[in-house]
Image (tube, one colour):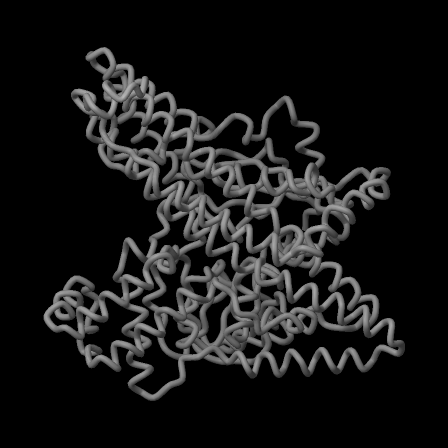
Length: 603
């Protein structure tokens, strides 16, 4: 077995993807001028957030996200051990490399971090209330952006006689620049609190490990379970609408998969009209929820594809009619949480230790809701609006003959969209043929073929020489990358006689037939009593948790979204197995032990 992964510069281009580098900014690629540095680092593919090949414009949000993450570690908070996370794109896939701060700088950085982080922890509620105002204001700013074809003649009153001094040609370019500015600001807001939320949890985690060296990681995670967060609100709205459909007597409208037909039936009665009005009340903002991670323009958003929430509602209606309780087992989760807290607190000998334990736990419970809430406001709601606005702009170019479909705009880099806008504007200002209609159609088709080849490629899970021991806590707890998982990658990744090992992410044991799905489009295939096996899960998959017995994922650690959501729904889960989707076949009976972190293939 090899002791290292391939060097980044030695990874070959997939067949049919020659020239793939043209799809991305030069600064995000591995480059000859940085070869010595790049080959000294350990890189892993971020399958938790970006499991698929990126289209050129989608790479924008990847770049904004990771740069903003690093900025907060290095320039805002001065996190003592971390200089952020470096990032590259290789064959279309996202690769990350945690950068350690120079050992000699760590002591000097502590004072700055304590001062800055301490201010946030002390004033968390007020600052977080302000964050909610900022993020909702940012979404409103995005919604106000207007992308419409340039007019044949500017409006006399609005543009000329008003003395505005600028016209539609300026405005459409300004709107695109504004969209980019808001997207970057969005990711600045994202990390204003997130790194601190993790820092508080890591401090609590370290205290527990020092106080009780044998304490399981899962026991620590369960001490902060039972939270009420906005991330679960879309699912709660689905349940509310299911109950309302039964109460109003319109449940029979939810038959089949035809949402239009369901709406036609509902509109035929006052009760149905009342239900539709209630649906619209929930839809904004809660159904701005992506069926995937929210990081790809191809992820389907509930509010744009109402067959998705209608399907979930129909399932909930059937459960209500069977007399099932749709509520999350919050009280049971909190009772178990409190039992564990009291059990370990009683093991501490001194009052000062117990006080310290309770104080750190109290801080984690204050800050932890943000760790999940941001996911709805940033990755789902805000990104949904960004994708919609980009499609509106893409449609403008369709009208101008630059390309065939609004979504073709996502095959341009963000800088190229600016270039195309200038071309469009200049040919409008001086009525003459634009260069774009002759340039972009063939280029977009070429890029689509390259992207399709990249999607077929199975990305190497890592590159470079792995550290002897992986101890960086974010890497372990969020991405699920440990010395053991790296060894499994090097060994080729297959289940042995004992099955698969991963993170004990959510407690409980379940047996049942496996249902292996690799995309959100397959969610409808999941049947009652099956065990979901997937590369990762998205928060928007929560409505199927009432059907399944357990969850198994390839990626993610004990603090990944999949792990947290499964704990809050009382669903056994093992995350970060590495190869569950290739080692397990649909229909095989498996046993999932979410307390031990094991998956056993029974046949």
